Image (spheres, rainbow, N blue to C red):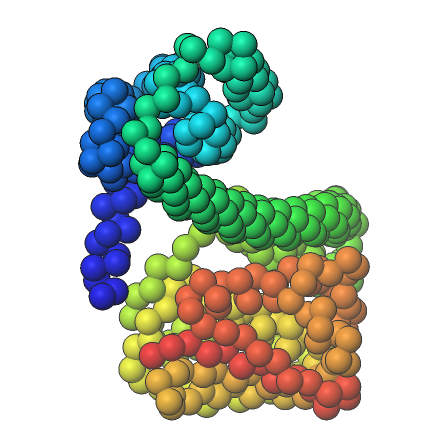
Length: 443
């Protein structure tokens, strides 16, 4: 039964057309011309049975004309022309039926109400006053004609039974038709209301997405402004220092231990600036060019050792012991450049925030389909508030235990690059008890 109903519904929707190919008024017109044709076909044999031959001829002509109107509206898409001809034909039919089917003595009043509802049903609102005036004036003129010229209106019923049968059948058909039209319009209204509500919901969701995107863009823009203001200050200061140190060394104004001290300071300033520029270039490239990870087989043991080799001098300066127990021999699918930058930034931070004679422990493990590197230090640790802001762009420079300077950009890069590789970065920390960073990649 459900299958038959769905097939019948698809057939009906094809007959009347669907949006957006057809307007709502056009679809209603197609539906009502089909319904009117069916009603006329049902009335035709009854009128032939009671001997109303002129009415039978009129109905036959109407069926043909309605079929033509439907064809032009549905398949030729000439709705306006079909509507105009339908309206003209409707009034012509009403007048003809009144004059040749006993006037007000017949069922014409029922037909007037039905025609009015039909015209209201499938035309735009601007035309409704026109149909109201026409349906007010045309019946009034016909009734006045019948009153003053009754001889013009022939009585076509042979007996009371014929009139009674015609009135009853016409009333029954008009009642069914008006009921069908009302239900059809109500269903159309409900369907269009539901569509409108869905469109409003979609628009609301889209607006919410746009607002969220705008908020995100504004936040990113604010962060970038803060970042570049920080970078412009923090780059200029070490460059000025480096220039001053270079001038002193160039002029041979320093000797012995003092000269070595200034050379070491120049090296530290240059190394700090290089790290900052490296992070800045990597971050700006990721933001502006949409950097994507390029995973390749990476030996993490070798990568960690490479990073530690470059950080030994910084650790030795603070007498920090680095214990490396990374033992995983198999390759991990990762972006080697990204992972090197990530490990380097976290190790540098560990050295930076670990006091003299502290320790840093680097270990790894592979289990449950994931590979994890942990980097633990015995440094100053962090509060909950500090950890909450850890991966955002800092609004002020941070200083290490030996007055080392940074901008906070490195850890934001670490998180973005880990996520690009399908991994994650987490941190645990307590003030005064150091921090542990966990880098996790899927195997």
